[in-house]
Length: 119
Image 1 (tube, rainbow, N blue to C red):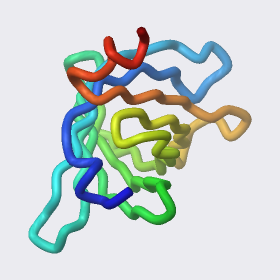
Image 2 (spheres, helix red, strand yellow):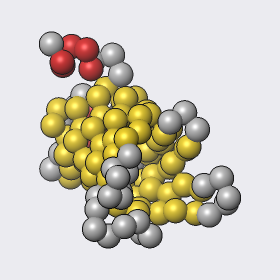
Image 3 (cartoon, one colour):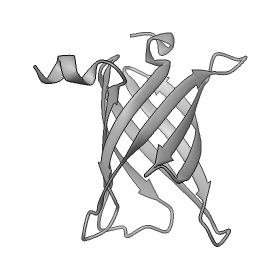
Image 4 (cartoon, rainbow, N blue to C red):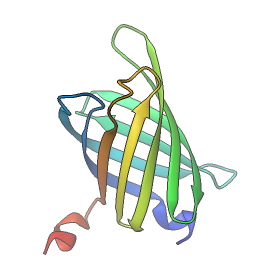
């Protein structure tokens, strides 16, 4: 798989990094910058934007991400995705100040492909 194969928009379902594992939904957009590095942008629950820079090797995406909450605090973390196919990513994530006993989880389906994959 080539890094260019991953460019696009994905629907995500995930759970948070805590004992409750609260679920969320959103989108993940992967684009290429001028240096052919992937830039990641999440939109979680239609109201929280997160940005990240990506490393890609051996069908593994590693994203260093950050976002700002409604009170202005900055949060940082790392997300790791196994690229099952170019249309399906399976991953986990952790924030710097998150609960170290838990990992967040995410599954990403390329927009327009999810229905085909579930048949």
